[in-house]
Amino acid sequence: MYGGYRRERCPDCAGGFFSGNGKCGRCDGTGINTQLDSAQPKCPYCAGSGVCATCGGTGTCGGDEGGGSTIQTLFG
Image (tube, rainbow, N blue to C red; front, top):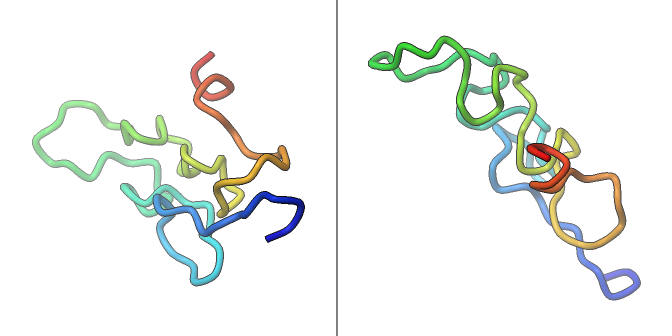
């Protein structure tokens, strides 16, 4: 705990131990939709970028230290 804020491993990243690897956990960083019954070619969770939409590729979530993406910056 530093300054009252705690940074934790992103639960939606594809891998990593103490911090996530920053890749989308749904498509494993490929950006390709893994659901075969879908007509959408891009991953719906990362919009085809391969970057984790929850942490913005940082691998950590929580705290208020800046640097991470919020829902407003991703879709605003």
